[in-house]
Image 1: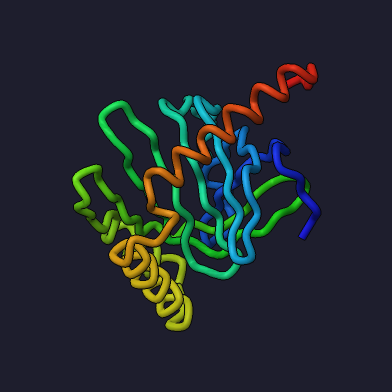
Image 2: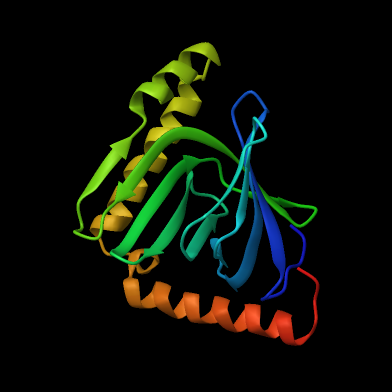
Length: 185
């Protein structure tokens, strides 16, 4: 894995099992490096869909990418509360200043109320069939989903609101430093 520094700006690329790019984000600012994951932040970042459509995210986000776990977590700091959008996906790799992973459709959406919902089961079953996911892959995906739910139910620090607000402050400081040093965005 390449050596990254706090404040570095990376991109994100999400692929599907067939190797085709699904979606890309133009900004992920590195906020922290832990033994088993890296933390990034962004706000109003440009998103490019596989079909060429573009849009911008609407709110600040703190993102956790895991080195060995089969998911990533996007903490969305919305006006009406903190939401978590958790993708069931391969562990990430870093390549050419880009975070890369394969998305496996299933998502865990956690609402400010604390309730959660598993999303996109039909899409997962469809892709499992047409892309011939192996039994081992299917097992890894469901282990990831169950581990993610367990982490949430045990109030893991990645789901802690105060912790994520601190990361957002770090993101704002990093952006300010980039502006002051006249780094071209």
